[in-house]
Image (tube, rainbow, N blue to C red; front, side):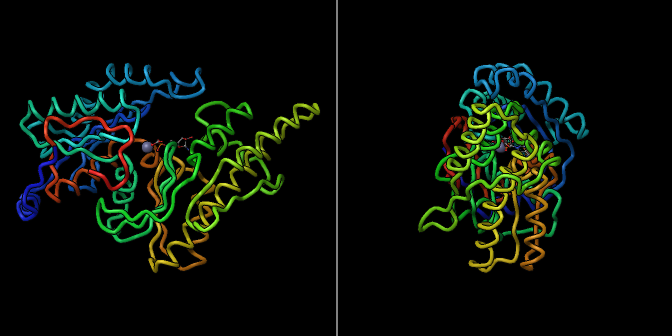
Length: 354
Ligand code: KG4
Ligand code: ZN
């Protein structure tokens, strides 16, 4: 149940004094907590990553992720408060990711945030994980306010949106199959680079030639802003199989660079086209894949060429963290959004849904 208080009431409360959000994030394999002042100033940002734990399985094991969140969450929240130099009584509200993500993992953060908010008598604000990713852009760019175009590329999502207002999105395009991060992870696994694929491909590609292998660039007929990565992924897998069958060595660096180049071209061309066609001068990126060095460089270059202002969060705010959840929770809080004690984890929460 969402309790929407009068907008005026929310606004007045926010204007009275600083709004301090204690934010919690546990949707996948990072247990994270942060304290954020007025949506933009990070007082603390604690991330406990489980990556090493999942590496030996080649991907995130949901049951292990949930258990690890339970082990870590109190410690991580305690550290976030300590680093910020505040106590629970100083906090204005508790923000928490309640979807989308792994249900068991989400539940840990949601239950914890509810318990803290209830005990400390603070309002609870549920946050959409992807809205969090977009809001990571507000942290280091005080001048950035909606509207703008944003490309969201993570392990589970690939969306091209107009951010109409804080937390208000118009979806222009999305992936028809794999998410961009998923494609990175699958290709990395196939070529033997292991998990997590994105950073490994990024690193390997630095030594390779992005034009060494011509991989296909798929277009979705009639949907200029939609993405499709399954054809590219199959082409890479076919290339690897053929090389193995003929006893050829796989040129890992060239393959990584050529695959990455194909993904980057697909992402950049659509994002720039959307900004130009819809008449927005500002273009932002968000999500784990937004930390990719080739994507960042290509976006910057394309935006310079097209006279667009490019925004991106620092890599640490691109991959999962709670600072971005605190930024998003602040704007939800200011709108008067409050969640009840019946807030539940919603693993397939749609963008724009509350
Ligand atoms: O946003 P995120 O941390 O979690 C989700 O919400 O999914 O994104 C994780 C995804 C993974 O697929 C990971 O391989 C990818 O982001 N990723 C990268 C890079 N760093 C993380 N992909 C490409 N290049 C990177 N440097
Ligand atoms: Zn994420």
